[in-house]
Length: 124
Image 1 (cartoon, rainbow, N blue to C red):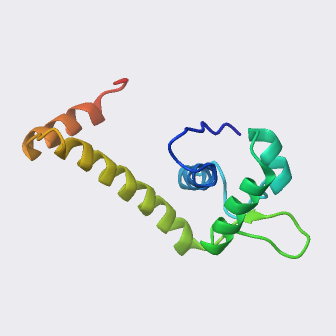
Image 2 (tube, rainbow, N blue to C red):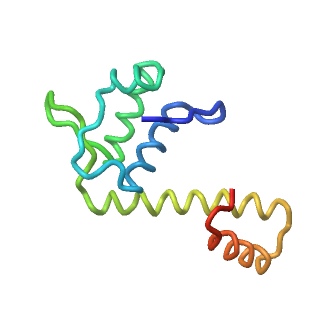
Protein backbone atom coordinates (compact mmCIF):
# COMPACT_ATOMS: atom_id res chain seq x y z
CA UNK A 1 0.00 0.00 0.00
CA UNK A 2 1.70 3.15 -1.24
CA UNK A 3 -0.08 6.44 -0.68
CA UNK A 4 1.73 9.55 -1.85
CA UNK A 5 0.66 12.20 0.66
CA UNK A 6 0.86 15.89 -0.19
CA UNK A 7 0.73 19.00 1.95
CA UNK A 8 -2.24 20.58 0.14
CA UNK A 9 -5.14 18.32 1.08
CA UNK A 10 -6.16 16.91 4.46
CA UNK A 11 -4.62 13.48 4.99
CA UNK A 12 -7.95 11.74 5.56
CA UNK A 13 -9.20 13.09 2.19
CA UNK A 14 -6.07 11.73 0.50
CA UNK A 15 -6.64 8.32 2.10
CA UNK A 16 -10.23 8.29 0.81
CA UNK A 17 -9.04 9.32 -2.68
CA UNK A 18 -6.47 6.50 -2.63
CA UNK A 19 -9.14 3.94 -1.75
CA UNK A 20 -11.41 5.29 -4.49
CA UNK A 21 -8.61 5.01 -7.03
CA UNK A 22 -7.86 1.44 -5.97
CA UNK A 23 -11.55 0.56 -6.21
CA UNK A 24 -11.94 2.21 -9.63
CA UNK A 25 -8.90 0.40 -11.06
CA UNK A 26 -9.97 -2.95 -9.64
CA UNK A 27 -6.97 -3.24 -7.32
CA UNK A 28 -9.41 -3.41 -4.41
CA UNK A 29 -12.19 -5.84 -5.28
CA UNK A 30 -15.77 -5.82 -3.98
CA UNK A 31 -15.93 -7.58 -0.62
CA UNK A 32 -12.15 -7.49 -0.17
CA UNK A 33 -10.93 -7.15 3.39
CA UNK A 34 -8.98 -3.97 4.06
CA UNK A 35 -6.43 -3.21 6.79
CA UNK A 36 -7.69 -2.25 10.22
CA UNK A 37 -7.60 1.43 11.08
CA UNK A 38 -4.58 0.94 13.31
CA UNK A 39 -2.79 -1.17 10.69
CA UNK A 40 -3.42 1.45 8.00
CA UNK A 41 -2.11 4.19 10.28
CA UNK A 42 1.07 2.18 10.94
CA UNK A 43 1.60 1.30 7.27
CA UNK A 44 1.40 4.84 5.96
CA UNK A 45 2.66 6.59 9.08
CA UNK A 46 -0.39 8.67 9.93
CA UNK A 47 -2.22 9.38 13.16
CA UNK A 48 -4.69 6.59 14.05
CA UNK A 49 -7.40 9.22 14.52
CA UNK A 50 -6.86 10.30 10.91
CA UNK A 51 -7.26 6.72 9.71
CA UNK A 52 -10.42 6.44 11.82
CA UNK A 53 -11.81 9.62 10.27
CA UNK A 54 -11.09 8.34 6.73
CA UNK A 55 -12.78 5.00 7.45
CA UNK A 56 -15.79 6.71 9.05
CA UNK A 57 -16.20 8.93 5.99
CA UNK A 58 -15.82 5.96 3.63
CA UNK A 59 -18.50 4.07 5.60
CA UNK A 60 -20.82 7.08 5.34
CA UNK A 61 -20.22 7.19 1.56
CA UNK A 62 -20.93 3.46 1.33
CA UNK A 63 -17.43 2.63 0.05
CA UNK A 64 -16.67 0.22 2.88
CA UNK A 65 -18.68 -1.63 5.49
CA UNK A 66 -17.92 -3.20 8.84
CA UNK A 67 -19.99 -5.94 10.44
CA UNK A 68 -19.69 -6.21 14.21
CA UNK A 69 -16.10 -7.01 15.17
CA UNK A 70 -15.13 -8.30 11.72
CA UNK A 71 -12.59 -6.51 9.51
CA UNK A 72 -13.85 -3.74 7.23
CA UNK A 73 -14.45 -4.64 3.59
CA UNK A 74 -14.89 -2.89 0.25
CA UNK A 75 -18.57 -2.53 -0.67
CA UNK A 76 -20.22 -4.96 -3.05
CA UNK A 77 -22.83 -2.38 -4.07
CA UNK A 78 -22.47 -2.04 -7.87
CA UNK A 79 -24.12 1.39 -7.87
CA UNK A 80 -21.62 2.77 -5.37
CA UNK A 81 -18.72 1.19 -7.25
CA UNK A 82 -19.86 2.79 -10.50
CA UNK A 83 -20.23 6.19 -8.86
CA UNK A 84 -16.63 6.00 -7.60
CA UNK A 85 -15.26 5.71 -11.13
CA UNK A 86 -17.57 8.45 -12.43
CA UNK A 87 -16.58 10.76 -9.58
CA UNK A 88 -12.86 10.29 -10.21
CA UNK A 89 -13.29 10.99 -13.92
CA UNK A 90 -15.40 14.08 -13.21
CA UNK A 91 -12.87 15.42 -10.68
CA UNK A 92 -9.96 14.93 -13.10
CA UNK A 93 -11.82 16.65 -15.93
CA UNK A 94 -12.87 19.60 -13.76
CA UNK A 95 -9.30 20.10 -12.57
CA UNK A 96 -7.95 19.84 -16.11
CA UNK A 97 -10.53 22.23 -17.57
CA UNK A 98 -9.89 24.79 -14.84
CA UNK A 99 -6.15 24.74 -15.51
CA UNK A 100 -6.58 24.95 -19.30
CA UNK A 101 -9.10 27.79 -19.04
CA UNK A 102 -6.68 29.76 -16.90
CA UNK A 103 -4.22 29.91 -19.82
CA UNK A 104 -6.89 30.56 -22.47
CA UNK A 105 -6.29 27.55 -24.71
CA UNK A 106 -8.97 27.26 -27.40
CA UNK A 107 -11.16 24.15 -27.11
CA UNK A 108 -10.24 22.84 -30.58
CA UNK A 109 -6.55 22.98 -29.68
CA UNK A 110 -7.22 21.27 -26.35
CA UNK A 111 -9.18 18.44 -28.00
CA UNK A 112 -6.45 17.93 -30.60
CA UNK A 113 -3.76 17.79 -27.94
CA UNK A 114 -5.78 15.38 -25.83
CA UNK A 115 -6.29 13.02 -28.76
CA UNK A 116 -2.59 13.22 -29.62
CA UNK A 117 -1.36 12.64 -26.06
CA UNK A 118 -3.93 9.97 -25.24
CA UNK A 119 -2.90 7.82 -28.19
CA UNK A 120 0.83 7.99 -27.42
CA UNK A 121 2.39 4.96 -25.73
CA UNK A 122 4.74 6.89 -23.45
CA UNK A 123 3.99 10.58 -23.02
CA UNK A 124 5.47 11.38 -19.63
